[in-house]
Image 1: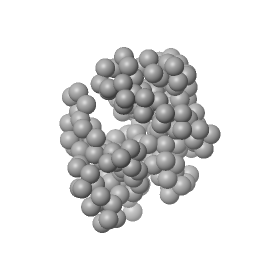
Image 2 (image 1 turned 45 degrees about the vertical axis):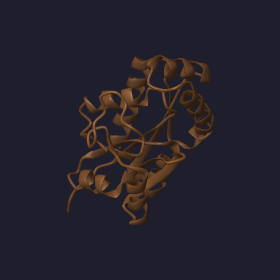
Image 3 (image 1 turned 120 degrees about the horizontal axis):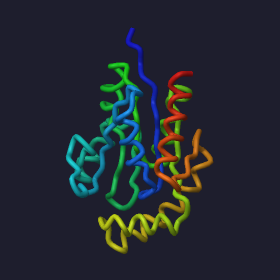
Length: 190
């Protein structure tokens, strides 16, 4: 019988530093493999299909929903879908690797419900909405309208933080990375 890996779920408002923290953990010795999410948004910067995300058209995404090929999904904005392909989870767990998810709050909580004690859910919280706005503006990848949408969404997402197993406030990146490493050490060695 294959020793199935554990699940580590990260969720956060856009711009909280979640992706940076996740990438730093992947470089550590936690036997982690990244679960690549599917999305209908366009690639940003150097992002590549099959490496950072599976970039799908809204019609392709809706077809995968109707075929039951997604573990979880959400339409975050009109025609802007994010989700986790079941095939990703099966691909990674069958090797006995631990899976790390970088997902929307609703998706993260749904995965946690499905896997219970085999998963830990971690919410990366920005120090404030003002700081989040500064970070989003500073990255220079989004329009003012998109930033406004992300900030409105962030306020809603922060209201879910209490439902996660752990909350890490990212007011200092090094400290937040260390804190998540400690959470992983405790969870994976339990």
